[in-house]
Picture 1 (cartoon, rainbow, N blue to C red):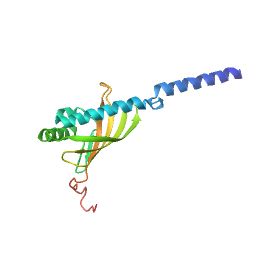
Picture 2: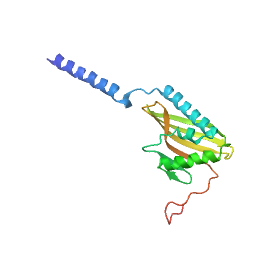
Picture 3: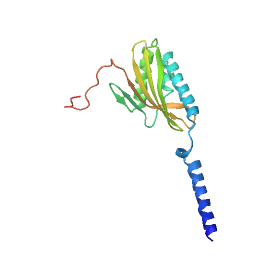
Picture 4: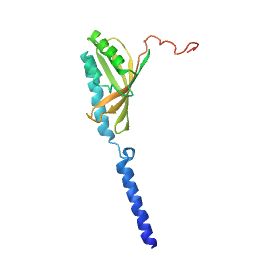
Length: 167
């Protein structure tokens, strides 16, 4: 009787382990090498698009819906449509600007989430820095930017967030 009970407990443990390992993506082993290669390809494609001067090609690298956030030195934007219209206009008015980049860090956070830190320069700015949160689109399998922070040292100071702040 005791052996039968131990057998049921062992079977339940194996079943629970199988459910956790197979049904819970967080418990699955990440293919860090494969995800890293995919995201590196997405970063290279983004900079190819930026160097083409084609704002539509650049915007094709962004998730463009849901929880998008752009955090720049002078402003933030959560409205993708408005922000992307301004970005497309910038690329249209700066067709000869060329960018170079160096991927400083790529962190795989989950099977469908990665974060990159990129240092770069352009023909208009000596030093640029981007942090991107990339998400893998379920429908297309493409890695897209869901959140971007962009900064550069010589950018104009942002307006103060609230009256009375000192910093």
